[in-house]
Amino acid sequence: MSINNEAELIGMKKASEAVATTLRKMIDYAQPGMTTKELDDFGNDLLKELGARSAPYLAYGFPGCTCISVNNEFCHGIPTNDRVLAEGDLVNIDVSAELNGFWSDNGASFVLGRDIYGHGELVEASRTILQKAINNIKGGVRISDIGGLIETEARKRGLKVVKNLTGHGIGRSLHEEPLDIASYRDRFNKQRFKKNSVVAIETFISTDSTMAVTLSDNWTMAGNKGGFMAQHEHTIVVTDGKPLILTAMNGIWN
Image: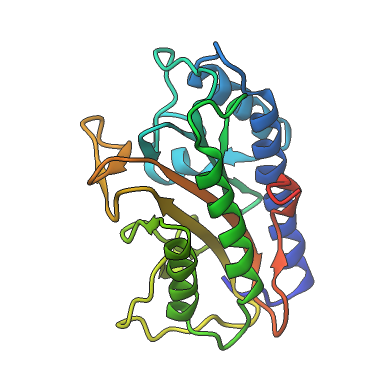
């Protein structure tokens, strides 16, 4: 969507604060021995308290409130009572929701407890690359140039990007134009970021895979060549200068 007035900006800020607060509290709440269903139920309760509704459930009938992916799972992991979190797990939580007709999206990967398997470097790469990408977005900038920046920064660290997972426009629905804000330089994408538009910017930084494939549950995705992936995401408003980060309250850069 494009922000056309103060009421729309306030609406997006409220929806974004809801998902950002929920993500931050879910990360803090997660602990070894907890199931992903318990963590998801906690997040669901938080969103309800804030008057928000799960976006993946509303939009796609996703069997959970939030997406929780663990270790080799890249994204869209279904919260279940069978998946028990353990020390050192690489965990990704993606929280998106609707509030009063406005939709917002954010996510983060993190290491649960001690980094006994060495996932911390991957997580930090994703986190810092997202920050650099967002700092270079303003009205008129080519979407493909930001994708190229993300991929270049990943390669500097000996890492890859997942090419079939992308950021997207957002606001009045979960996925809007532009639908393909890729993490690589897509030479066929001639679109530019537009001032006042709302977009969800994501990094998909991988150790081995460049594509994500859907597993047998028809939701969860993993790498085509295995390995691990870290993702971080903010919903932002594009301006003539530095973007307005609507989900800053999630604290992923703190």
